[in-house]
Amino acid sequence: MKNVIAVILLGICLNILSAPADEFFNKGSQSADIKLPADGIFPRGQKMGIYFYSVGGGSEEKLNALLPPEIRKADQEAILTSGAITMLGQNYELNDGLFELSKQYNLPLAYPVEPVVTGERVISMKQIDKWAKDKRPFPEKELVEATRKAVKEAMANAKIVWWLVFPSELRFWRAYEVKYLEVVTRTIRETDPEKRPIFMYEPGHRDAEAMSKMGQYTDLIGKGMYVNYGGKEKERVYCRWTMEQVKGALKLLNRDENMALTLPEMFKQPQPEELPLIDTWVRHDVYCSLINGAKGLLIFSARRRPNFTARQTYLDAYYRVNRELIGPRQLSRPFLFGAPMNDLTMKQLSGPEKVTLTLPKEVLEYPPVSFANLALDRERYIFLANSANDPVKIEIDGLPADGVVVADLFDANRKVTPAGSKLVIDIPALGVIGYKLSRR
Image 1 (cartoon, one colour):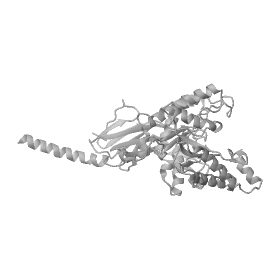
Image 2 (cartoon, helix red, strand yellow):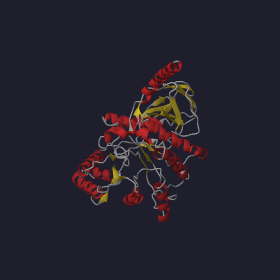
Image 3 (cartoon, one colour):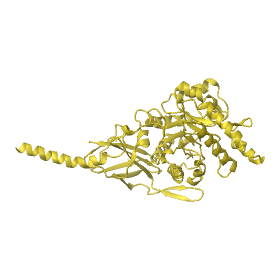
Image 4 (cartoon, rainbow, N blue to C red):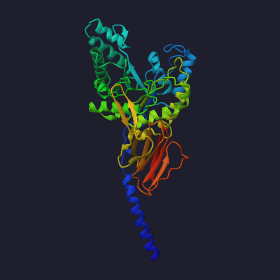
């Protein structure tokens, strides 16, 4: 009889302990409910869109030179078989070879639409400016016909998953450029029966309001996030600000925030003493932008450049991070499909309380750590990115006591043990932490 009572009491205790864990983990999204094709590119598939611009382009002697065919082929082979991308994108002077590469390497494609108007392929804003400066009526009829022709010639290719508007960086204060974007995007949608998403790259200085002016014509929105090029090496919270602007533009347009892209940097040569920081920079910039809402990763760029000896170091750093996202660990999934939760609190225990971002017209202050708490498949993923140039100590509170197993997503050998409902985490300067929480 005593044994029976003991078993009953034990069961009651276990039920009491498991109730908070059940409540905590039985929330969020389930992969079984995702109806998108497993091999498609987000937002129409389950794979995160990741590509490098200018695969096989440039040279060490001249930016726009063509590499010898054997070197170009080796460059393309290395990147396109790296396991670090999910698609092909803008290739500029090599755009004409995109279909061949897409077929050869079985990769989806973001395809640039380059209409030929009055005998010229429109690949620069100078050509559109010339229409205005010559006081010509805007050639709408010719542009519609040229765009329709370009789309019709390409759209049967099932590898195309996004359309890219070219030229990029069209300016909202130039009437002819606005008209160009409106006509091209409207014609793409009228011509393409699949209504594939449209994207135009925007320059890094634009804020939410500026991007909303041109973003009203596109589907995906993203802008250059060139931290070092913009002189923000010591203010890497610029990544967070960038994603705030992208998501802010989508909000102003009453659009789905899942249409946000990030475009991190790979083209400025660091100072010699900065070379060891490249891996840290890349990891911080990518994860900080994902934590703050990016759903696709377009890296500018894989092009060879004069005086850019850090190219391979950058490539290797992006390979490592990208493979975490789309390789066996599939860390892109919680960022794409995890439901954002607010049942964990973050408190800073030590380190700088604020980080500063200096912009042309204002100085902003942010807490140093960006934090994501994502629920997917009855597990929790938490990611933290420290944008301070000093270490910080963080306390996460709200875990169900004695009901959680914590796994380090980046280092399986690193032990993580909660203290009751709390996790205390040391994050190095510009460091990134990722944990998966499961039921005990």
